[in-house]
Image (cartoon, rainbow, N blue to C red):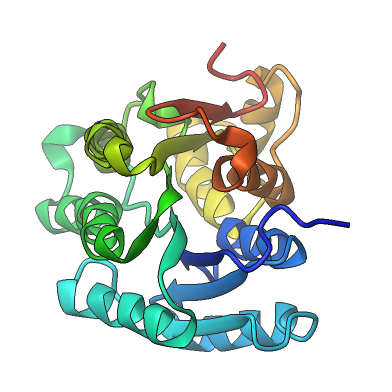
Length: 256
């Protein structure tokens, strides 16, 4: 049976996190070759050992800081040297920052969040696009807060909105080569990243933030990383051949 991503070369930043790892696993199952990039080399090695056994020769990893141009250029070059030009860039690296009002928000933390989400997505596209095959796909992980806002998380919300602006520019610029560019917008996901966020928000809300989210999400639960990964597969594959410049909500109806 034909696989949707047979021999397609995919780069995933934030590759050691739950969404990056779930996407890598699904893309590999569909026949892709996958380069994982992440700041945490130990986590990358563990991730590769976890999912690489069933895909010999089709999974590689590179420790990288997405906020540094030389580091991004390095993992793009490693990918091209190993497998040839890139078909899919899944720009998924992220960090959260802290919970604080704008008047108290630390300047250095704001800069760190913007550097990973915004500059990181910019640099990944800048260096990957010249080595992408025509007809490829760029997917950027934004968030439900890329279309809404919440008090206390100004850096994260600002960064996620900025990624939508970047996506829209890229979609126009890459269209001549039939390269599609879209953002995905997960709501709360059942993973360690979201748990960290909810621990911070519990004090602000004055109640258990996890329970709060489950009450206000129409589907009444957090997403599984595998569910977000299926949205990535759709945008990476030819199933979305006429979808570009779009925001795909994966939020259980929270933004409806």
